[in-house]
Image (cartoon, rainbow, N blue to C red; front, top):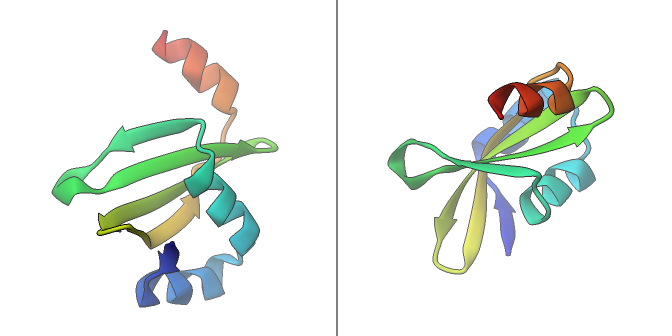
Length: 82
């Protein structure tokens, strides 16, 4: 189950990112990076923006800590990495 933390809900009042996009990013990311304290950064491109969702696992649940757009062209960033 995907659960939004209080912090994620509060931040999204300001950022107004559709919950459908956030959940889609967690379920079907284009990129997953390890972060500190066992957190994961899941990323997915929407138009010319990259949505990054910070998550952690608690048992069978995925907790969304926060979410934000990185911006820029995702494809060119991937090409630069390779």
